[in-house]
Image: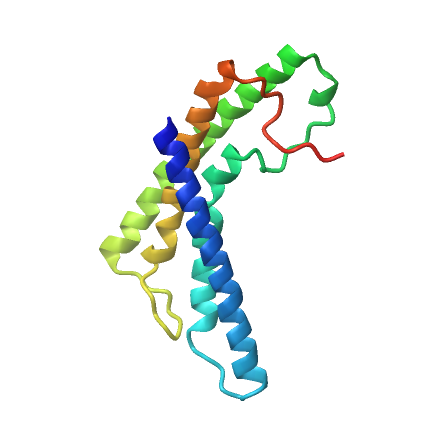
Amino acid sequence: MQIITTLSRCAGVFGACLMAATGAMLTYEVIARYFFIKPTIWAAELSQLCLIWGCLLSLGWVLSLRRHITVNAVTALLPAHVQRLCVALSLLVLIVFSAIVAYWSWDIFHDSWVRGRTTGSLLNLPSWVAELSVPVGFGLLTAQAIVELMSLPRTQLSSLGASHE
């Protein structure tokens, strides 16, 4: 279980680096476009790619940190043991949903890989580069949700999100 949590953390840190790279690329594009009248052909597409990968790679890490958005207005009023049951049910739904998304998105990625689809943009990158982020990200989320569900009996967890009141 610790291996999956460590893998989620490493993927999340890499995702954060991709977010920073997105900001750097867009800043460069703005400077190049508006100050030097020399727009790039790569900044928009590569920043979108970094943004997609960065968000999806971070899903498992964010779950392990309990930073996903939760609405707990009703569950916070329930007794602690019922709150824990709600957390378990939420994790089960998350596991099923994430596994389905990972499974079906793998087919989409594989189809693009086999057919050699491209983005059709100036860079004309292979479509599978962006599409692979979905099964990878949701696969990590599925694995981390299983870890969280398995560790639930040993914790006093009553919510999957941070408390914001």
